[in-house]
Length: 610
Image: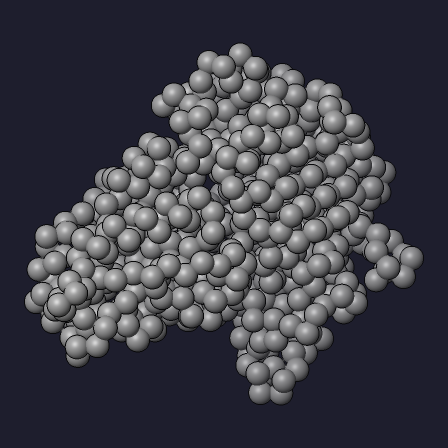
């Protein structure tokens, strides 16, 4: 899917702005949140599974997909995405309307709906707590608080007038002054937020739909933050659900938030495949689901068995299990006969293997270090991964911007290919000679061993085998470093891993979300290759000041060539997401950007285990 240009680029003005404001006010009165109650039925339960553990539920602190999935159910951003629109379409969530964008894309004015309430919590001392503009300003400030070391600081660094200066002052004083005025974050009244940018940025609205910018209440953070300033274990938001139970790495239970305002299911689509879904859902008060139970099951076969026993309602099949359930791109007849449904998309995500450019063995920008990484990249057979590991449920990634994301080039073909003979010649040329034992040594004669980090699950083990096979082809000894997902993420941010296969799914559907992964200042956040390539950084800084355009796309081509030259990554695959859906689930369609669909779906009967 190729996404349309951002819809927020047109500024509102004059009579149009007045009419829009009147309509928004009328709608707000007609559906006042204070008059509504969460319509969720406690007897309706959805059970889903994660293949890896979460890390916690502070929007400024957690970085992994699984924690973000829970955060999207508890917290709310100003904007979100239409459930059925393809390509993805921004819509207001807590905002009354899409931002009013003026000053050549440097000023965003957002008005927040009145009467939205946070879930009850002791931090509010028995009072109802209304969502206000200052909660969003506070959330944006938290992203640059040096104490938090948020992995999402890159979303706002260098963008909001005065915010970097506040962070710099905190580094010097050791105290972040949340009460200090910031010229780029104004709240002229309780329900209006004005964001002033240092330069034109038409993509800010995407960031305002991304969970790290969710509203958080300062009282909650003050009450529950740990020594790092993060409240990972006590999330309190305005969303449809609240955290009921959390057994780390095992089980997460969400219950409907009784203070949530609810909404009416009224989505449209021209896709014939959506018409039955629309008929069964249209007009329902949402959410219907009263409880969400998430199990963490790392082993593939165990997840499938749990689904087949009816213990799970929704499950991402993944490529490893595809032969058990699918014939090509369709469910096998025995699953169809049971009424099981399949929601299938190509994820707007890339899977890639990185090398740590700060590592003394594989890092650096000298010719011999580049040659080593390029040789390892050429020794890896992506087609074998698709065939053996992904069971045909993937495509070779040619470009660092995946399909469904603005800036993707479907015609681009990477010159990097599987060529072990050339890889061996490259290593010979740059002094990586084989010893008597057949293994190569560094140019200075010291032993050469590469450590590959992976998770202790079946996918991790298969990746170990493929990379071991690849490096054996070129005489490089490989050791495997095993750790659980949260621990690997922590080591990764500290630039302590030498090599790992990672993935990045679109937080927002624009190329910037992917090209920032190798931007030098994002080291310690999302730049897990810990790369600092001056030419790349210069091009990236040019690109973020440009709207979607042929000129910006040319910069992305140049940046992609630099990735191929310096080899901080080996691009891998684009995967199909095959979501298995039990017959009792109504209204489900996998969204390409939203992490969960719980508030948009229903079930035809109560949990059969109750």
